[in-house]
Structures are given as C-alpha cells and as structure tokens.
Image (cartoon, rainbow, N blue to C red; front, side):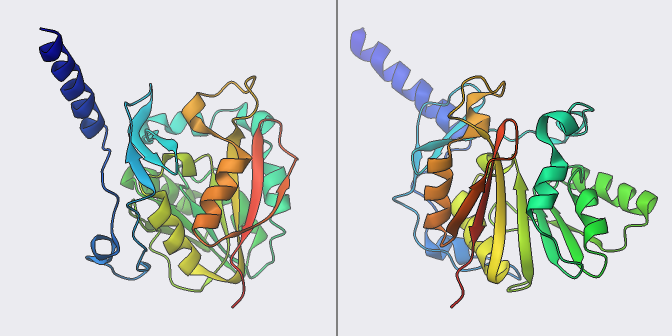
Length: 260
C-alpha cells in the first residue's frame, strides 16, 4: 500500500506540473526556429536551463536557471495596474527619468499591459516611436482606445508571443520591462529575441520588486533578487551597467547590448 501511495503522490505532482505548463526538456534551437518570422532570432539549446518542480502557490512549476516562473496576471487584473496608489508606491516618473529618453528614441514597453508606462513615455519621444508589446489582445485593445483618446500617434501596439516581442531587428534604443519578466514562460528565448531587436549599445531597463526585502508586500514569485536578474540577463548576452536605487520597493536594473 505504501508503494501504491507513493506512486499516486508522484503522478499527482507530475500532473500538477504538466497542468501548470512546465515543459521539459527545454526548447532546442530547432524547436525555437520553427515558424520563426520577423522579430525572431534563432536561439541556443536550453535543455540545461529549464526544469520542473512541484508548483508553488501562484507558480507554474517551470523553472529557469533555478527560479520558478510565476503565473501570468491576466487582463482581468488590469484595474490593479491602474490603481491610484501605484504612482506613490512605484514612482513611475523616476523610472522614466532614469531612462534618459531622447526625442527621437525608439522605445519598447515589453508587457505593456494597459499602457501605464507607454503613455508616460510617448510625450518624451515626440519624434520617436513607442512599441507597446503584449501577448494579450485584451490589453492591446485598451491601449488602442487610449491611443485614440490621447491622440498618441507615436504609439504602435504589437502583439508579441511567449518567445518573441516581434520587433524589427536592430531598431530599438531602449526597452522597458515593469514587473513582467518574472512571468515570461520562455525568458531565455524572449530575451535573446529582444537583444536582437536592440541597437548595439541599446539598453534594457528591468524593474522588479526586491526579493531581498521580506517587507515588500508582494507575493514571493513576483519578486526577483538583483543577483538572479543579472545572472539571467548575462545568459542572454546583456551586460549589467548599474542598478539605480531610486524606487521604494523595486530594483531598477539597467542592462546593455554590447557593441560589436
């Protein structure tokens, strides 16, 4: 009976991991290149980077470089993105200031959601472009409505995929990811494709809640340590420039695509 019980427990965990979307082995270069189109780079083998674990609360059971990937906050959580207290708790103005935007910059807001940052960036790049990238059509519909209301002609909605932001190669000056990266189902592929979209010297501004601080009132899987973030970005070929200590609860980490 003990053996039967153990087998039952094993299969229960295995089923839970599969149900959570965990894939093992990782995506190989051949798999990643299948169906590749504009905005997709050929990626390296990832068998040694992805893994599976028993899903934590709010987790997928899929791991990347030892970190369990969080479940995605869907479009039904859009109101939380626009909560009034967000401006005080996250200080978006400081993020935009740290980006040192130039009037003609091409900027990508990856995981744009409702466009909370997209429409703060757009006025700062009047001769540039802001790509508002999201994989959820419901979020992009909200962005299109806001574009019309604000007459934001330099905002371009882009429906990305779990593996690619679907952006033109070598065109992006700066990319922003606000509390989104920890939910990416394929962080390796996404970052390799984002790196491909960056100009040489282009920068990624990665904002994540500080996991080192237990007092930050956010679920554990929705936080990241600076050490883990730097490790994962380095694996995608991005150099850590610095971390700005300007936000109350989040890391503002800056990475760069090295010039050839």
